[in-house]
Image (tube, rainbow, N blue to C red):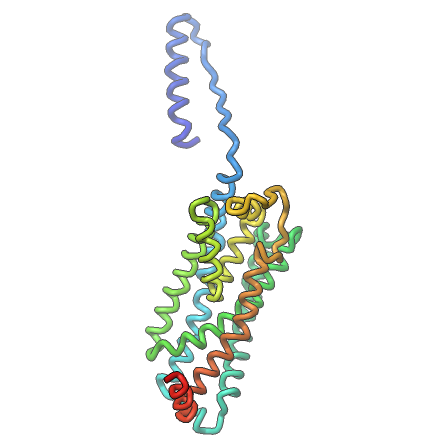
Length: 289
């Protein structure tokens, strides 16, 4: 019983007392039967987005520490000239970044494995069912997020000079991505904002943390995605089931993260090469002029 039921119960008690008073029958009473209207598909979709946000929030909160810790260590090495000592000792830039990438990825695999085992252990049906390849999609999200986030963190390290400042900023940044993903997901269910949500989703998808969290939101709402798509495109069949690996569901997130795995580490090496070699820096700056 909740506050929603108190008003009809109060009216029923007053009416029953009035009936007993008029009839003189102490056993007389009025029975109320309450049958609320069934929720619409729109209401169920929005309720599903809000209810699934709890699980996704804790997953996103835990995973936010990984790129922040990676970036902090890189900034620490630069700040204390540990990286400089390695380079002057004969370590090439390719060797430095390759070894860093492999070590960070191995560390991430331990965390990713534990996360997948916890999801299986608690039997979260939105992620463990494989009728529409949900569990396969969960595994792919974890596998692709690691290298993509590591490469992205390497590029973010160039923005900071002090380690403690880097880790605090990146934690806040990743939490903003978490909130932004929920906001964009909810915007998709309203006719006035659904087109904006599509553009925002494509824009933010270049951030691995956003692509990862958005993938989990879309997995949670897999049955409601056709309805959300039909708000902007009336030709979409709302009764059709979507496979989670399709580009219109979570497949696009996987594609974006796959591209990030290649682009961000290469970009980090290119930027470091420009900073490390004055001749290259002079050539690039001269070309820009």
